[in-house]
Amino acid sequence: MSKPRKILVIAMRYLGDVLLTTPLIRSLRQAYPDAELDVLIYSNTAAMLEGNPDINQLITVPNKAKFADNWALLRQLRRRYDLAITTQAGDRPFLYSLFATSQRIGIVPTKPNTGWWKRFFLYRWLEYDDNNTHTVLEYLKILALINVPPCFELVPPQTHDTQALKQLIGNRPYAVLHTHPQWTYKQWTVEGWLEIGLYLHQLGLRLVLTGGTAQAEVDYIANMAQQLPNDTLNLAGRVSLAELTQLLTNAALYIGPDTGITHLAAATGAPVIALYGPTNPVKWSPWPYRFEQNNNPFQKIGSQIVNNIHLLQGEKSCVPCHLEGCDKHQKSRSVCLDTLSVERVKTIIRLILTKAVT
Image 1 (tube, rainbow, N blue to C red):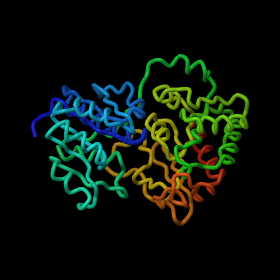
Image 2: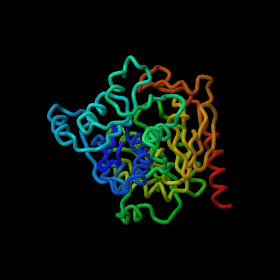
Image 3: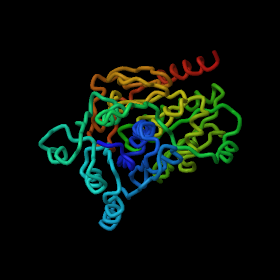
Image 4: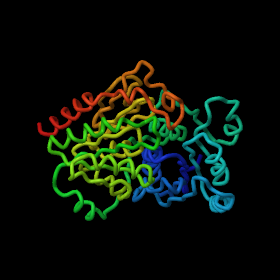
């Protein structure tokens, strides 16, 4: 394959997944510094790539695109690129790559009988591994197919307009709590969050609550804020992801569940306590700051510390089950998280704060 002049990366998943593609994007930029490098993503995840210096253009499409949306996009992509890279095995991103170029590489389903036709149309391909390879490393393995050296650095969204945020926070040290993941089966208990919030306040840290713009999430966090000390700062739905990056960068510590914002916190270098239950940490752990090794940072079972990440895992014998909670649907509770003790979280908090003053 000749040196590409125009490259399209297709990354059509959730916020955290988009952030985890940034090492792939940076690797391409370092290998092809003069190339035009565009990224195709869903409209509701574009903020995760705001200010990314490695990207020439963001191309967005609605998550639930109508026929007119897809037709306009296909016309825009038609044979415009020298190389297209798909980071998912789904049909929709693959269709977009077919229109973009004749040179395509990407991920295909593990079972040949469900993805044989995609293998036929791809220049080179990689089978999807849902169990034994971290997502960052899987994306970088795609680039190994065309001999692009890996860069392991995540690139958070960036903004230079942070004055309003600084005025809100003030000069006191603070801890960021992200209490509401998108799906119920990844949630810790309200009682646990409230006890930890009060404990952090007693240690002299101001509490900052973060969350998205969905009304159910905003209401959930507002109710929690009413039960916490009066100086608690509730930023749910009020800051951009780029502003949130700045907030996390300067935090004394961050605590959150398996969610995109926990991945973002990890990328800033802040001390992170990640509360994990059903999710497989081999595949979906936060990528540790300045972790530059071509091997999985975390094992499947057990609470572990790697660089700035303190991963606390539920202790049930079934963990990690890889399922959507005990009832196997997104609104299910997960017993392994419901029984994760406050004392375990407090122990890690003390460890982080002790390190900070020594």
